[in-house]
Image (cartoon, rainbow, N blue to C red; front, side, top):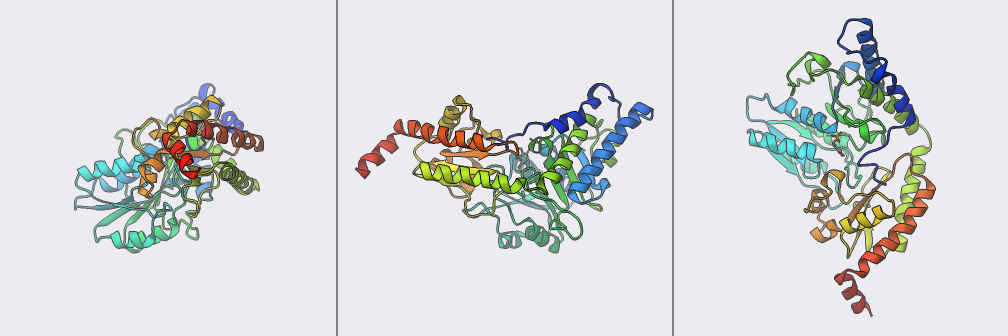
Length: 391
Ligand SMILES: Cc1ncc(COP(=O)(O)O)c(C=O)c1O
């Protein structure tokens, strides 16, 4: 139950990639037949990605993953500004955006970090109020990796555009879970840059996409060949690009089926099952719109890290905070930004289901978790004090 950290390859994705490791291993820039075969596969995958996003093939840039795409969006737009430029982002972004913004700040970019509500939402009015005449870029994530909370991206992007700023969204945790329509009639028509990552959508790790709307001027971060229309130098990762294209084709089919509704029902059954069996617990971001696979729960009177280890010993993989933050002594920056006390943030665990999660696995989780929580709480001084007060 840690699909927001990463997902396995789907068998169809693996099969689509297979020939491109050993048989068709050409360099997509070579003019001979082997090279052209690789080029054909890359362009076919680009078409699949563009179809998924409802955009032009030329608006797709393949990168090494979500982190690179986020960095390319921020640095690509802001690093060549000659006048002092202003960036607006939020306190709940993934570190790929947060740390890129902090780095830009050291290089004379003015940065505003918007605060979220206790439900983890960024209010359009807060964005409106933060806009300055020199605001060049607004970067707000689509769905949060820890809580699954979905931001009102269409409204936020429209505000940025009305003020003449570009809008980037990190859609790593929304892709494969929500439809993404960047066309002129689509919900995301005001989005100029959008990040995807392969390994959250059943494609390999180390492959990603940055959508760059036509007419957006982007300075490359890597200096080398003219790959990806001079926006991202480096020999294309053909097999992984093929895998990403296949994964997005499968995502379209999955999204159009009854499966998302079933996954949402499974997540809700899980959440309700835990709340019914375990006292002094709750859902972080429960009344905000959330992607249907994510459940961030706090279990008062215990440390998330201890629960993560206890569940791991029972064969259940979950995360305290995000995977990238696990092992960090600090409580989650997302949960503290939502106003949770450090204690409650440290008692919060992320459960994230995948398309492959079964009813039986949820039954098993509903047995394992309450027992593990009860055992850990027996060792907690605050829990025993609380019981004696109740008696
Ligand atoms: C919201 C979000 N953005 C960016 C990333 C980074 O993506 P990648 O692991 O492909 O670099 C992640 C990965 O956890 C993420 O959840």
